[in-house]
Image (cartoon, rainbow, N blue to C red; front, side):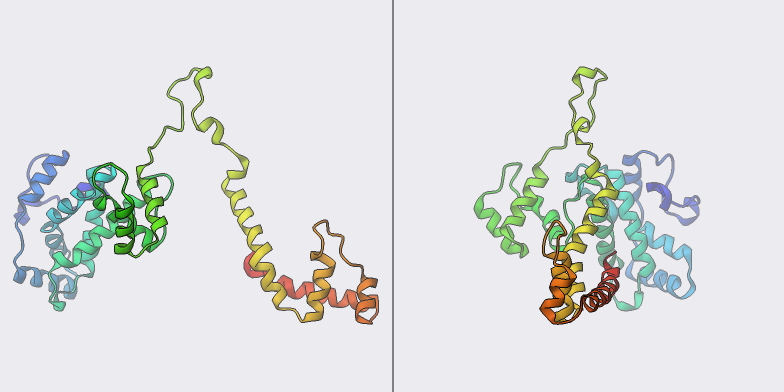
Length: 295
């Protein structure tokens, strides 16, 4: 869906005021700002038509009358270096979602309800595209990401007092503020060399390639780590004390795999070596079932 796809083909029949070529962003913004605003009564009427009759024409009128709101909100996010038109497009998607869920019987104006949906779509777009490396993954980090710029004074680094104040205001750790500021102030560099001269190819792409960084290998390594830590501990906790002692002595005592022999454990527990082997086999089977959740 393009930014202008919310504009209907038959603009004149709706009296929305669009005319001429809207391919230019400035022309689009100018046209949006000329669209008539809806009165509260008109908004309620259109909302009920959409809710009760699934009237798409009513939905279109509600969307069109609030396009200027999207443009206004998008201006507030231009500092992240992303195209204004793309921000407006994402905001328009949020606006359409808000209109679809709008309930005129709640007594809330659409403008107040739609702001949250518009900002949510823009936030997602910024977080996915602002950097190749994600800078905010938790709810607290997202809040910090979108508030840090507005609290900074120009391009200078924040003072310790400013960092402490922001950490207190947003209820995050001081270290998190410092880390996020470092990420935001870091400059992007080209991964590939701008020249074809073999002697000048010293761009990061030349030395960043590593088999260990290949996605499937990273996932495999993470899986092994989980198995060796929480997975193994969980499996061992399912065993009775004697079975656990046998497994630990046989398989986990030494890194080289040279564990206790069946006969050594047989003497320890006063049973035959065959009985130790049976207990070991049963314990390994039980552990395998417990580890299935981690594979």
